[in-house]
Image 1 (cartoon, rainbow, N blue to C red):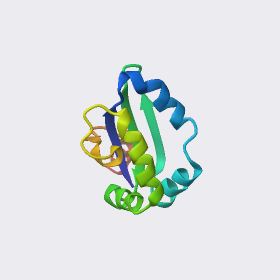
Image 2 (image 1 turned 135 degrees about the vertical axis):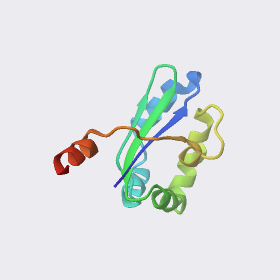
Image 3 (image 1 turned 90 degrees about the vertical axis):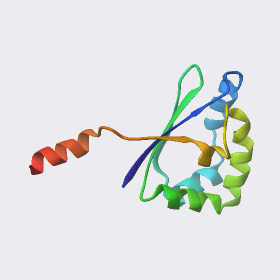
Length: 114
């Protein structure tokens, strides 16, 4: 399972609306995310608009491609794009992916088997 962490920057004047929209994501969008392999998916938002996302998936490329093939994702991404600063492309493709440098479970597994 691939762990993915990413960041985006929400425009400060759009934080409240962004939060409101994510309190009630369209059921069709939720189902599409689940069906295309976005598991354990969470978004975290700092007061200044820094957005950190986390998900687990078998393949980020496959999960993104699966979502790109859905009509609901095109509608959602079009609505969400206006919320972000310096976005290159759609939010689900234009995020900055962060490199994982530590995972407790992985290190414990290695320590136990060594």
